[in-house]
Image (tube, one colour):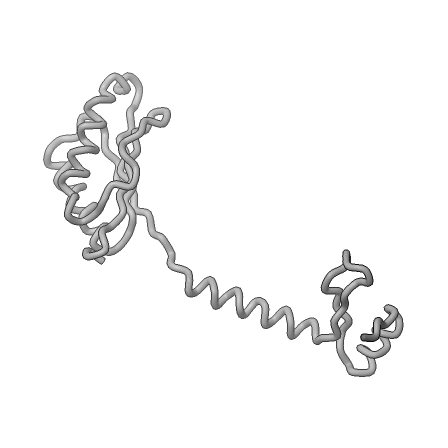
Length: 147
């Protein structure tokens, strides 16, 4: 196995009309490769783009409630949530507490649990209702059959 000094490797790469690319600079001696660098970068970008296209994109839809949401509004938002889960999107339902309404934490949790129970056949709860600051959040993922 011949180990070329850097100048000799560079001259060989130039004779071939290629670039000298350092693969592993920390190795003793450093590992270099003669290649067309622009073509290498192009192919690498192409591979990354193909991998990105194959990756599934997770869509998260949000539904916002107040602690004192009326039955009609609840039914309307429940229908929307059902549609989101049927389309295969994840659902983020949250109750937003404004001002002093934070004293109705239990109402907010009951509302979210009621939603989870109503949507049980379309999705499963990923994260139970959890209070974070002025928001109580719950995540739902679609069930396999509803996709």
